[in-house]
Picture 1: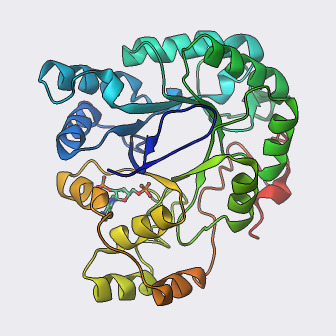
Picture 2 (picture 1 turned 180 degrees about the horizontal axis):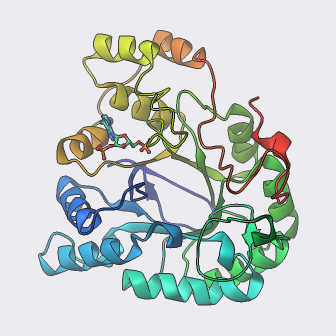
Length: 317
Ligand code: A2P
């Protein structure tokens, strides 16, 4: 499989990673799906302290090594993320150690700050009251991330859901610049401004919700899988809509973190490397109306309750 190379000394990152965030986690489902994915050739897995899937992902990797599907843990690229309740300088290292304990691993290939938001320290949870949001010491948290990197516990460090403004602050303070920014990105939310900025600064971009996500906005519609433009291209190329979306992302030099726990769809999502979109396909995709799905209102209220981020950063541009 094709690998993309993030900065910061990180080892190459397979261009398609399997996501493990789920709205309705089913016991055992993650472990089984990851094992199936490893059998199909996936070598890149994405989790987070918040998802509750570090344990089952770690079990699956250990089991794959026992079964001889992998020679060792070294063969997989594993990303996890620091939740907002631990986004405090003194909690970063203990939280990473906890993540590694859950994963039964000695190191992460990539450790990310999950959101540019700090919540009151405590059990990882979503905020329920205004008082849950506390000032985010971005520079202090980044220094603690750098310490994790220096200790070898995180081979690379990066961020997620960061705007160009947040990235500017990290870059101004960093000794080790962020290797990756993982953001919502797909043909219906192409993030052109952010991508241009990241390219200029040598920050690799990874896409979450590459297929439009798991109904995160609760509308039941999906701007990617339901796109008529993508459906037309898929028909002409003899591919699925999902494959067209993933191929487009790959051609942009962006890594996809795609979630499927279904074997056939897992197989399909990895099968995007031996064909290309045409210039006309790319032109049509560039004209798809843009719509951000993950508005994370629990974290960033439009009324400005959680003021760690400028609400204007969530406006559609
Ligand atoms: P499932 O796990 O049943 O396959 P995203 O990666 O953008 O968050 O999107 C994931 C959603 O899209 C999941 O609900 C997943 O469901 C579904 N999905 C994943 N791959 C495909 C595919 N190839 N075709 C259709 N739906 C897919």
